[in-house]
Amino acid sequence: MHRGQLSLTVVEAAVGVVLVMGVAAGFTVVSTGPPPSTAELDTLANDATTILASEPTEGGRDARLVELARSEESFAAVRSSAHDRLADLLPPDVLFRVRTPHGSFGHPQPPTTPVGSTTVSTRYGPVSIRVWYG
Image 1 (cartoon, one colour):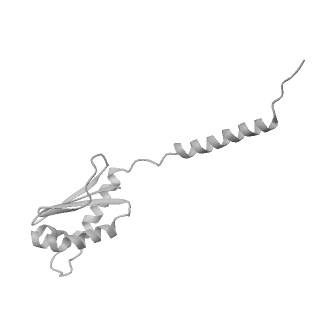
Image 2 (tube, rainbow, N blue to C red):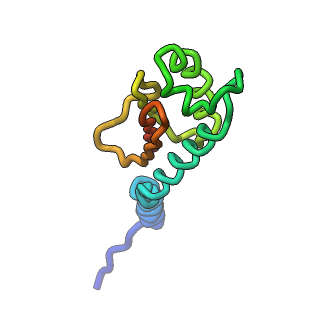
Image 3 (tube, rainbow, N blue to C red):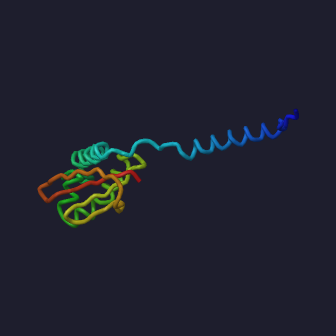
């Protein structure tokens, strides 16, 4: 009775291919983690709003948040510093958009991304801050 034998080199090559394919599949199928929660984003928006509402502008008259809603002139004067302050406050992977009665600034909001938001009423009108992971 004759038995066929497989070359040891062929067996080693097959095991190597299976091993490499398994490692490659592991890298492509790895989960990136749970999707960001809206509650976490709401907290970030609320924290950013609280800080803008408590920090005075360079002139010291009112808080940045109030100055954003006061008038078109004050909005134009404070917009850049408020943008920079929000960029410093929020994590690097979080984008934002601020809306006031006199204009908006920040990044355009993607239509399908989970968003956290908060709106604060000032004596000059509402100010809304929306944040999302980008």
